[in-house]
Amino acid sequence: MSVLTDPLALAAGYLEGENTREFPTPGTLAQYIEPRTIQTPALDLLDTALIAAAEKRQPRLIFTMPPQEGKSQRVSRTFPFWLLKRNPDLRIAVVSYADHLARGWGRAVRNDIQDNPDVGLAIRHDTSAANEWRISGYDGGMITVGIGGGLTGRPVDVLIIDDPFEGQSEADSRTYRERAKEWWRTTGSMRLSEDAIVIVLMTRWHQDDLAGYLLAEDRDGWNYINIPALADHDPAKGETDPLGREPGEWLKSARGRTVRGWEKRRKDAGSRGFAAVMQGRPTPADGGIFKRDWWQTYDNPRVVETGGGRWELLGLDMAVWSWDCTFKDTDGSDYVVGQLWGKKGTDAFLLEQKRGRWDFTETARQIELASVRYPGIPLLIEDKANGPAVINHLRQRVPGIIPITPQDSKQARASAVAPFVEAGNVHLPASHLAPWIGDWLEELTTFPNSSHDDQVDAATQGLHRLFLGQHAGASFLDELVQMRR
Image 1 (cartoon, rainbow, N blue to C red):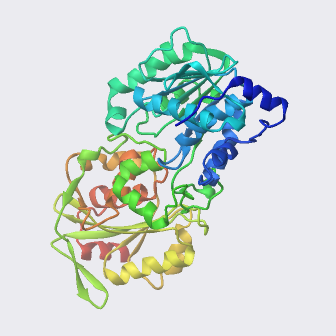
Image 2: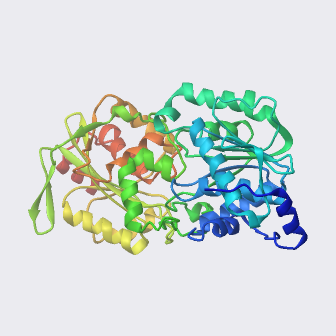
């Protein structure tokens, strides 16, 4: 049980030089309080941002990273203690989606101070409740409330908002989102001094959540840091990772998660959940050019292996391979994508996809393998960027290559085939046939705001050929005859 420190004894300790411990970062204090604390690169970056806020260089911070990686412990527990050690007159408020959760942080900070008297702080005997307490001999302390709770009459020097939504269902609810915004407008922001420190810590469940709202209102006023679980930036586009990771590298976990553990979390979260919770990039359930509920699904295989590494299409009138070959021979480049599309009557079917960050040699090898796997099927390759080099390299070795020169923008091409998707004429394989289909659908339904568009480019090129191309209704034989003229 914690024992309240005698302020007279504390003062005597200062005079004798006993209570002079210094903690240059919140992380050093966290490790002093709990030696088992694992300090990761992500927490190093968080410490740097918290120090910048404390020193008023960047006093407003929005910080997002995957859950269970120590951000709340660092911001809502250690940071208030660290601030009060530096300035015991600071008035700190912690707000969360529920009063009991916010109160838990107040209790934790109070107990840390009581359990570590050698740091040099003590709690006043007459104000020591978990939801509100003060530092003995000073004006500073801590108050906690749930979103919707009042701070009337209480000036705030430091406001910490830690998870204003309990989960996806609340964030998806316009009522809950408006409640959080209204609390900020009428309560939270009204209690702040001009240079007050504000830290918003949350899971990005929705584009229009509190973080999205604050950034839309005043992007330049916030230091916004998002650390994705999986580095998926594209250096070729000038993108960088906040931790300096290479594309495809998972976050070093404060909980000791392995690559296998991260992959399991990715699978369990689903495509939309992974993008929001783990990557910090929420996407709407529906939106963009392609609506999520427009796509049809088929459950039975429409291709069969015939032996010798070759496959045959089942009950289809025609098919094409559609290849997007944008690459720059780096691990951070766009993906190369090849999609096999088939058509029967008025319906198109996505049959297979090949996707990877490949260099020129591997791209050519994959296209040649696709030709061997499905002999006699035309291969559409966009005749731009790296396409001409691939086409010239393969023409004498792979039959059926058709150069495609796009005339319109990516969005225009997607819009051109969207009516066929809306009409229910485009069918996707069920997840048990194609485990990758969730990520595919996420990219298509969030385009043009998705982080990558290589799968979109391959899909719209293939669908355009099947539905709108010069030989859209041709059979395999007709298509090949036309190619060779």
